[in-house]
Image 1 (spheres, rainbow, N blue to C red):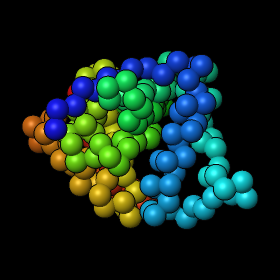
Image 2: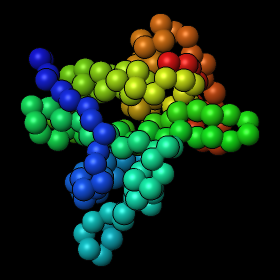
Image 3: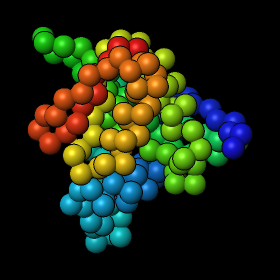
Length: 161
């Protein structure tokens, strides 16, 4: 499948688009966590969404488009403490119609290239498909040079881009 994709940093005026796409992400993710729609028929809002435009040094929102159409999004965080400074994928969403096409892998590699440094990418233990995806994508990107640990119900891959 020949995909003409484009990844770009989301502008603040596009926040509502991200908020809308987040509903599809929440729907997909609901099979792995206890999450239901509210009385409005929608899932709740993403708690830290505004932070992606107020904390521009540590949070990075991206859209993925294919042929000019929204195909997903990625939220990247820089987690800094006295012990470490690492990039992390906070949220990663590719619409179902584009999955298994190589788009997710390409987008992940783009993120790793855009944010050079140490990474910790995690998945919840119940989300087996995400674990398979990230292990494969990270192994390919790093040529197998990554470590993995289990911590607080999460599988975490650690590597340097």
